[in-house]
Figure (cartoon, rainbow, N blue to C red):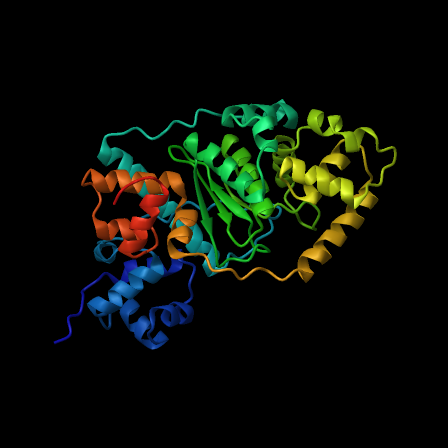
Length: 383
């Protein structure tokens, strides 16, 4: 006999809407028909235990959640800095799903700290916009304890990305990565509320792009203004807030005094720049060439016309490039997406009998036990 579950239809509707799914798409993801989903949501039929598990997986909710008597308050709307405040952009279901996953991990982290009897790390940092971008950037770099010598010693963009993320996690900021969302929709977002502020960056972006995004989002956290970001400066309807945080990220990565001291900058007597010099500077600071160009423009060392011309060339080159389709091993993807800080916390909770093996796997994206063991080895932790 098939066992059916007497869940609350209101909770079912609430969960679908929070996940940003219309009925036809939700039904497809669950593996049922829109008519059957409609019957569940109206209370005219009941799903089976197996169907409830599929629903929970699609809506990112545990099975027990659907037995609540009344729907909880809707989660706060994440500010959207991608356009002007009065311009609405519909968020894709994929993006809404990633925001929900990040919130869930944040809530899990707070609960685990409490159950372990630990106080979450205090991100004791705040900035005022009136301080100016240079002062703010210096403050943020000092807070992260990443010197220019360290930055310029990184061997490549991958080490640079790891270096900045590890510096952020050491200060109590959790950094997650996600996929399945186009970079044209969003490059990253931040959940700035304390405790446990979160940065989520689009894993589909290039490593250099992610470096810039993670520092841009860190500036949002320091200003206590989390939100959705795409980081482009020059499109119509763009929110005026974003260029300010772009300037901060650029100044952190390429400090004005250091850029002006570089030989390529000192000997250049024109407002136009050779690709060779731009590439050398980009490699030295572990940033993209456009970041260098933007910094030169902000210092009055090139023109808007030259910047736009080169930016157009770089965009054309990027579009023509074939994206690598390399395979990312399951344990590496799980560790990348959840971050070392969150994963360490899960291991700690598991070894202190606060977290079951099943929940451990679920919080890491339902990875298999053998992959958790491999993750532990990579972190220097037994399992």
